[in-house]
Length: 520
Ligand code: FAD
Image (tube, rainbow, N blue to C red):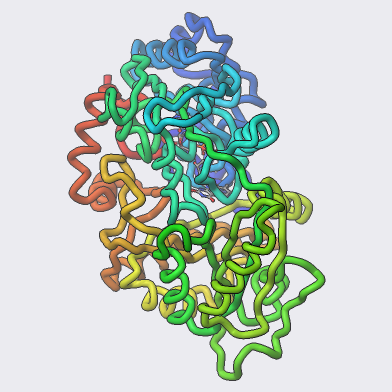
């Protein structure tokens, strides 16, 4: 995690080494900053906040933080960086990366939360119907609130947690339980306004400047800063029936999960996810992580004798409006009858659509209260081909992670055909692949394990995938060397490099991804 100005944090949160205050900056950079008409914040509090992220593992102070109000401000900052010999620029969404991806060591951080204007309802010429134009720094929870409360409309594809920015998730993918059906968030955007690394402001879509449009989607912030995104809206359902069922055999779990995600409309569910959990009374990782309400607790007596150390919970949701209550019960009954879960271990609640989509907000509140929100988060997200997932379960969930991770271990299938191959995202080759998300919520050291131990465990898991020859890709990837990035992008690496040369020829943007070095 180290480079010249980037620091790895010791378990107590203090930098292990000190490379001097970035706010003082090299002389050349200070001169550029003085000429910047954007009121860059160089005060220690602003610089310190931009030097950290949700991961809490790396620290990289920028020379200044800029709060752009308009796309022109973003362009001005990028052009000024281009006139300096070494300044880089990182757009920072909500800083929810875990490996310093939104940092710019000794460079400029653009705090995208300040970007205007407000959201606007527009006609979507590309798909017909209605869409919303959203500033790149808007949070998904703001889009939900605005869409549902004001217009009764909402996007179809979400992330589990909505405290993420539109520009941040569109730079990665944006995955949740709707993606098997509607595609990830990058498949649900029809137009972008982008300021490229060359400082040009461009409106792009699948029909106009399409190479830039697809480059930026899943492009890890390498080609341009997303200043506006056009997201199609659909009538929002009023309610959600939310169901969880438990399995002790992974083969049954994955067969049912794959059956669910391959059902065609109108039989398709609205949301399919799932997770592995520990077969024990552990309060963070065990049986109690499954029930959706205290009125129906988990009865461990129902787990078949001889079950292994890990169990699986499949999670399904069906949308409905109040007038459709009878039909939704019927639909839920039909789905449950077909699934091979452990009878008796089914859990159902109803929630409003907004409450269902805001479910991780409640996790955040609990994690803030117990201190695990502020602790380091060495998270690992992997996309694993369906042909390897049973083996992955045996080697990873049932061996390396059999005692849990102090948080959710998501594992659910997605369909490659819902992702546009023209975007920059790297995916496994097979049509069905699983998202495995290891969302560690340990208490900070010394109350919990040292972050370095968990990082080492992540490395063991990735090594296991490599040595077994799995068809896999990291989601929210994090590599240090060109060789690793070339393997990650595979046959699309030359396209990625070519797009970089075209749209950010000095390699100014998103240096925290460790993909390219700034050139003069
Ligand atoms: P940042 O971390 O600030 O930025 C991420 C990258 O994008 C950086 O390289 C940055 O420079 C670049 N960037 C940011 N804004 C822009 C912009 N406007 N234009 C161009 N580049 C930009 N992901 C999912 O897919 N599904 C989930 O369910 C999910 N849940 C999560 C839950 C939590 C609690 C957390 C912490 C993360 C979760 N993520 C999830 C991961 C999330 O998608 C990434 O963290 C993503 O980076 C978005 O976070 P952010 O908006 O804070 O972006």
